[in-house]
Structure formats: structure tokens, C-alpha cells
Image (cartoon, rainbow over all chains, first blue to last red):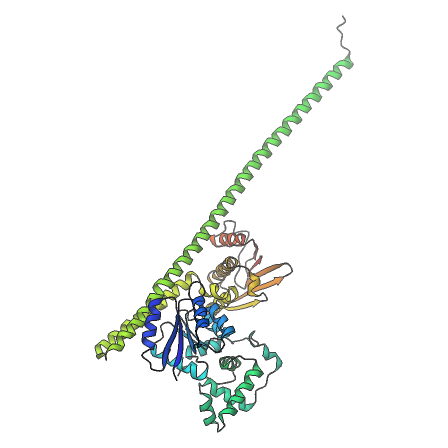
Length: 224
Length: 262
């Protein structure tokens, strides 16, 4: 199935270049382009079908990507947001993940990485590359209770099975792959995942991964 | 007509004369005193005016500097940076057109690295001029970033505590000057004070907000710093620009503390 993609960047030449490159991939189709946040929201609203994935620049005039992402998370929560920004630093990465970005890429990412990320996000709901994983993990150094994890105060306990599944989610396995690996049905895996979502008060799988990394619940091997 | 003065008349006259003399002297003293005070007041007024003028100059200077920084950072990032992004994409499109020879491949690699490196430098320079985090995520996030940068060197610990919501801290103007003040203070702590521990607190107190900054460095004699360095002067000017009251506290061997109420 094709991924329907929206593209938001204030540089027309960048949008054109990105569209031309991505359209070489048969499973990606650019359905919508916007030059700023306001333009993007108007075009999403006017479109009969919602895009699956949004490639979002942050620095744009009129309304930037930060503001646009907040509104999209509110109004169109099904759209998965991949930030594509020249600002690659912990503050930007952590804040965008907190807003609900499913992935974060630098503008100098190789086009193949962009395409892979689009597919991974579509399939698994998130994709954090090694750099982002390290940033999330390091963000917790020396801080027992983060402000975003208020649920931590309620002594949430995950079962052994849930931690096992969480580990595999962090290793970027799809629900199908996890089911095969653990000899479970895919519905059971999804059930466990949904349980964790409600236990931990996370809004999506990305939230689970952030929780797992921050709490040190799972082992990651970020530099592969 | 009798012309004989009685001794009592002479005494009276001398008394009156003396009284007049005393009054005259008193008048002179009062006048001189008055004139002196007027002169002094004029001098103080002039000094105050000069001081105010100087202060205004420093403030205008700071404002211009900030505007320039903002302009250069924006131009760098928006123009050069985004064109480099386009260049990066265009290069990859070119690369896809044909199977490159090994030589073309290695040249391509070189170009690619060069673009990535230039993009990184543009980002760094515009970041130094004006941290984008401040603009997009506010003072607290910018301070967290500053903390990360300082701690990356490994020699200094920064503790950051805040009980104020972003919306309560102030407008972007206030956030910018508060950030610059902390930046200046950390520079001093690292460069001159050789501090190992820095504590930054942003506190909501009854009726006002309080920025408290401390380090455990070698400290200095504030009184001996009559000729304030440009750094300290800038701090005071920035504080005044956001209607804040700044108090500095330090002594040799006692570390340094700054309290800002706004």
C-alpha cells in the first residue's frame, strides 16, 4: 500500500527536490505540499483524504512547525509526523517528541534514510534513529521523576510479558513480528500494547518507547 | 541741642552694630552654603544626566547588537542554510541519474561531505548568535540546553530548578534578556571564577519572579570592582531594560551570587 505523504517546507526548491526524489520510490506518493503551518492546516482540512505521514520543517514563516505539530496532534492525531529540520539538538528532539513527533531527521539525511523512515513510521508508528535514541536515554541522567511521566508517581508495574514486548517494540519489530517471535497471536500482542498505553498514559507507541528508554526498562544498542 | 552720649547709648549702639554684623555674617554663611549646595546639586544633576545618557547608550547598544544578531542568524539559517538543503537534494538527484564511476563516486562523496559540513557550520554560527531553542521553546528549554552544553565539558555541574510556567516568565523580550544575563554569568563562572558547581533557580515568589544564580568559584571583592567591567555594566543595563532589580553578592573565597527580581 502506498504511503500518502504531506510535505511542509518554506523553501519551494527543497519541496520540489524532495518530491522528485521520493516519487522515485513506488510506495510513496506526495499528496500535498505546504509552505508554512497555516497553509498546511488549510490544505489538510480541504483534502478529502488525510495524509498518512507528514514531513515537517520547523522554521517556517507565518506559522512554524512546532505550532503546526501541536495543532495536528490535536485535530488530526492519525497523521504521523516526521520532523525534518536543520536543528538537530537535544532540546529540539526532546520537545518535538514530547509534542508527539513519530520521528526526527536532520536536513542532511540521505534520501534513502528519509524514505526508510517514512516506511518505518507508517509500519510501526514511530522510528527513532540511533542519535535520537541516545538523546532520549541521556535526557534522564540523574533525574528520577520526569515532568512528562507523572504516571510514575502511581507506581505503575508492568508484567514480565509486557516488558518483553516493550523490549521488542523498542527493537523496532512490528506487532506481526513480535507475535511470531513470542508464539502469540497478533491480537494478544496488540492487547498487551494497548494495556501498556493505558497503564502508562501514553498516547502512542512512540510514547511507550520514550518511557522504556527513560526508565531504563529495556536494553538498547543504539549504535548498530 | 545737647550732644552728649550717655555710656548706655554707646553700649546700645555697639550692641546693635554687633547684631548687624552677626546677621550679616550669618547671611553670608547662609548664602555661601546655599550657593555651594546649588553648585553641588547642579553637579549631581549633571552626573545623573551623564549616567542616564551613558545607560541609554549602553542599552541602545545592546538593543542594536541583539537586532543585528537576530538578523544575521535568520539570514544565515533561512537563506544560506535552506539553499544548502536544496543543494544537498539536487546533488542526490544528480547522483541517481547514472551509475557513477569509482572516481565520480569519490568526488561525489567529497561534495556530499562538504555540503554536510557547511550546513553544520551555518547551524552552529546562527545558533551561537541566537539559540533557536529560546525562540521556539522558551527560556527554560534554552537554559536546559545551556546546562547540557556546560556539562558536556565535564568539569562543571549545573543545577537548574524552576517552578514557573513558560507563560508566566515573560514575553520574548524578557526571555531574551534573562537568557543573556544567565549566559554572561555562566561565562564569568567558567572563565574567571573556575567554579565547579553552578545553581540556577527560577522561582515564583509572592508578587514577583526571582532568578537566583550561584556559583562556588573563587569569588571577588565587589567593592573593589568600582570600575565595573563591561560584563557587569551590561548585566545592569539588561536588568533595567526588563524592569528588573539586580543584586550581586560576592567576596574572595565566597563564591558568587546574583539575585534578579522581575
